Length: 184
Image 1 (tube, one colour):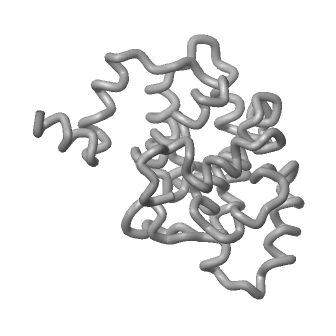
Image 2: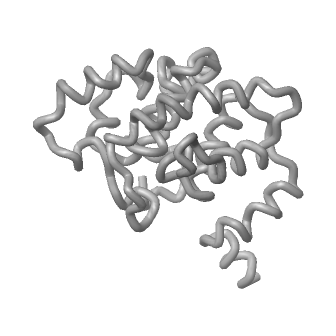
Image 3: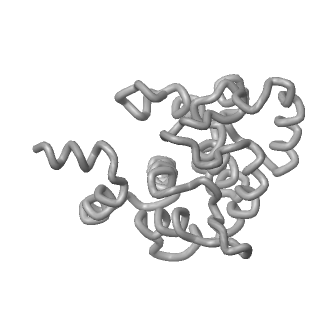
């Protein structure tokens, strides 16, 4: 995943894009699909657990996730979660799934709003606080929020971003895209 220059051909993306994968339009249009997407980006990305799943990364309930973890618990934390999937660790853990289940209901509702934009989804995921005044989307910063928003675009769940939206998000990401543009 990390060294593949073509995002859509990376092992993890191929797994969740399969016919019965979590980004199937009907699946990602449900709360369970959103939960599975958060699990994918926030926990399972680039892990043996994802690669070995036979369900394309889709968990049809909170209980299905818990049962999956129980079946594989003896394999250890690294089986479920690659702490350096998006750089330095920021508390990534399979134990965050509980928070993603809660957040999935709120994000699913947010996605129902008419006229929702790519930028609004990134801002919502990266900045919304939960009842405890901590991030509702635990461990999701701007980069993870951006990547998940792109996943939602590819799945047809939200509209494609405008050129202006992409231009505005590049400096916020402060990653390779910005450095590449500065070197032009």
